[in-house]
Length: 276
Image 1 (tube, rainbow, N blue to C red):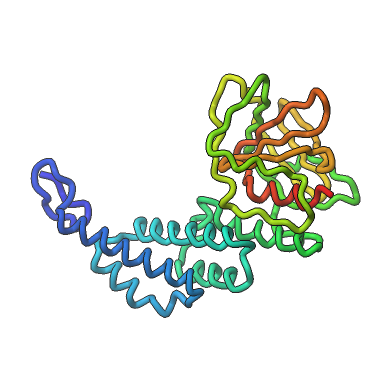
Image 2: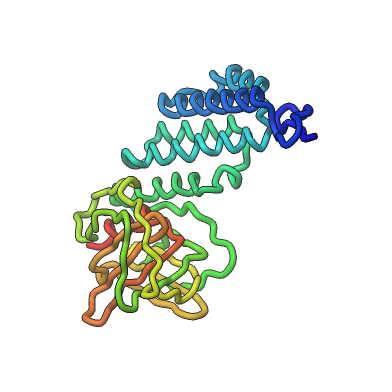
């Protein structure tokens, strides 16, 4: 006889939960998620809603792992919402910081889907859009395989980026309207435009996995198999997708490269605003 995964009491043969317990869990989850979403939307202090959230936790069989999953989901949604209507502003940053404190979770746990990383990248883009040199906001661990010029400033470093090269042709689904990088400085494209994914075909050949460095002048790629530098002034177009960017540089024999595992929204906006 199985036990109910919610109340831990006998659940009967071939059953892992009581219907009533499952319903309590789902109701509590929905109530907590709705409350957190409302706090993010209103920029309201989460501690004001703490009694209601704790009450829902106690009555819903929601344990610590499930609580953290709910909190993480609320944060990820909020960051995407804040980014989709522009750069994360000071009030939104304070709301996220207050949530981090309220959640009691580690920043590593809250950054599983890179939401906190996106918030920092938003601050970097704000500096760039304002015409300022981005303040250092990342700590680089391990080897740094790039030699920058004295007049060049590091903007961001991405690890574990897979390089694909187009050999014959490429097909995409859900494409992002084919945005060209030839735009005026100060233009910001929101995250909502970058939702498509490339279709896997035999024509996109995986080359290697390495690191991508974005500076105020160039995009660098480094791996044991291949390394290159592309000045932003040589980039003809950038197409952004949910799992990476396709970059085309000028030259009669130049073919697009696809960088998988890079934040396309951030990469696109950095290149676009440093190109001219």
